[in-house]
Image (cartoon, rainbow, N blue to C red; front, side, top):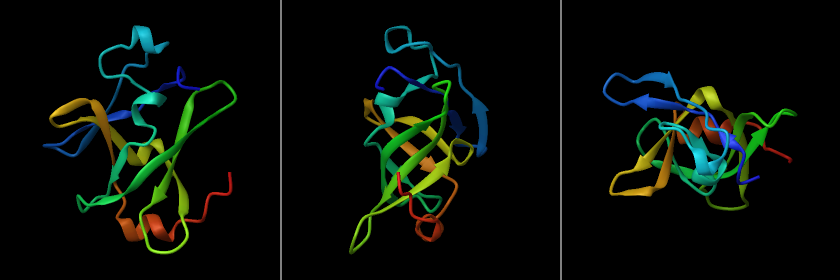
Length: 121
């Protein structure tokens, strides 16, 4: 589903506000501010304390193909833990210095992410 489009909010870092992005129809016609599933799969996830918390494992889509949430694999000792986070709780931006890579930021701390139920997808 690399061509599925992920409509995420961009973070206005200075104010902490979220603004809705334009959703592109496919990767070859990506509108400014639109992100595709391919842009964020395997992207690093940064928590609210500005620490790496894990990486994006999957993007969950509804029946119409609209992204609804992401699955984050949390960095930790022991077995992998994967949790679901709603799109309302994340923002995406190109990685500074490497616009081909993207970073996903969450409003949650790593501890809050770890406290979420395991995803059994």
